[in-house]
Image (cartoon, rainbow, N blue to C red; front, side, top):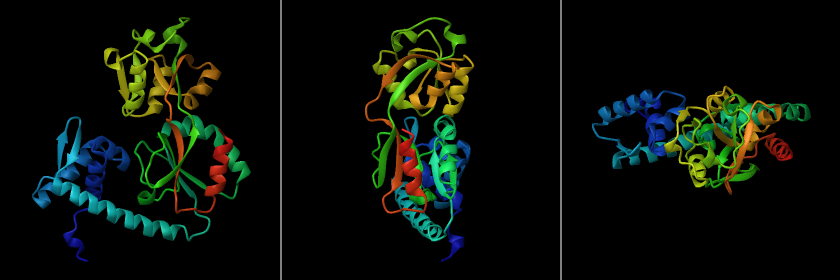
Length: 289
């Protein structure tokens, strides 16, 4: 193999992620780099190959015919590399379980509970990797993901961990002693929302409030959203599991509820991988429902 003929690996990863997500921002989040870095890598590849690999489409991007062919080959190649690395890792006794999950779910749901797991299973080491990007477990070497969605990820096993009930919450310093019957009554207040929570915005619209008609501020992470709401900067809707503790402590006030059938936080695993400690961790997660 003539490695001198192969472009830089970071550039190839950037292109594959951007075309797979059809978004420079989501590719940047997955690879933990900036939006500008992804764009720069793609431009460098287009100069090297003397062809367009990706074009803008609405608010996102889409691969050209050449770009899609290259991205498909890269995805296969990266998956082969990940499988080889994963197979070797699974032969090594005592390696930690690699868990990927969103930062908000890690901070609000898992961390207050993980001490119980450590006390019950001290022999199982767990490595937590909070990430906003949707991770390919095989390619990226993860044993389990805790992700929000409908549970329909082809090629993986998924099991509902926490249901889809959402609470609309605010700080007392923002709303005082006012009480509200439904979401539509909250249009006069500013709202805070994470960038990529389109499903939640649609659910709120079904309740009679179009967030395009209110003072809406979006933030890059849900942790920032929750911090802003606690500071009295606006209202938000959050999974019950993420804000129930804040409501119980009085840091936030529950205004009303939303229900999204079939959506929630899921335990996602590979069907053909059963590393040491995984069954114990899944069993413990089930006990925390």
